Length: 150
Image (cartoon, rainbow, N blue to C red; front, side, top):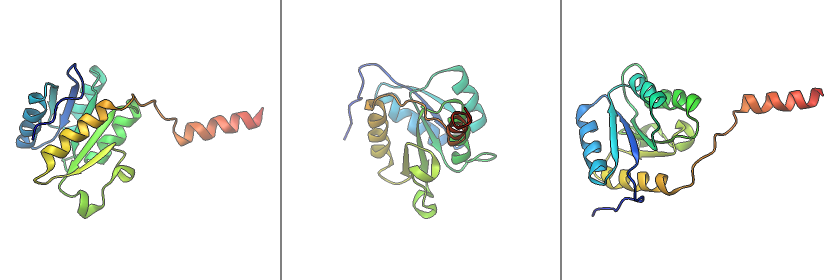
């Protein structure tokens, strides 16, 4: 059952996965919906791409060499705290991965329903108002201390 894109203009989507078959499959599905999809086979390359170009959504795998999906999201959030991120993992249920524990906006379990779930997640993230960057706890406590000192 196809799901119509939520925007009249194509979204810029970055997919990060060390598995070329996963990249091709997800890219094909999202391009068929009219999105402009870029791919990276490593989190390090993806971080460089995010510094060069704005993406509406980043879709990342969890299990990758050198840097897993959670570590990638942590690094991405340092430079682009408002970027929408979807984490996909075959281990989501087994490891108890969720939005709170990963920093992702959406966590999806790899399954027979993955394509439909991915389409719905992308559409939902594209429809929501743009997130404003959240101050980190450290920055927040520093400003409280400086106000208290005055």
